[in-house]
Length: 135
Image (tube, rainbow, N blue to C red; front, side, top):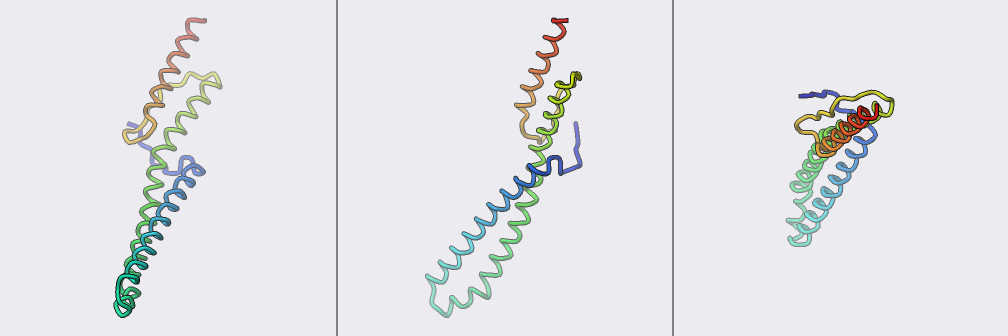
């Protein structure tokens, strides 16, 4: 089993993915915040609505910060599961283009794109067999 400890394999791709996750977290949190505050103010009496600033708003802001942090961590971990295989496949293809004989692509248990790696391995085996018969 291959174990990679470096989480930043393809920083550009991973940063874009994390930014996408963070944007989703901000949008969902903002919608939750405004709907909750708006609904509470609209549906309660003015005295009770004044307590929103004391009780509801801080709880929503804390959950927003926690959601943002969790989204960043999840984005980094999930992007690592995609970026690692892409990086490995790209290096394998580059090796073939340079005339080297690469081994098979082996991915970690939780990596994504295993179907693509399996197809690429079949292609490489076919390519190597074709080269042997042409020699």
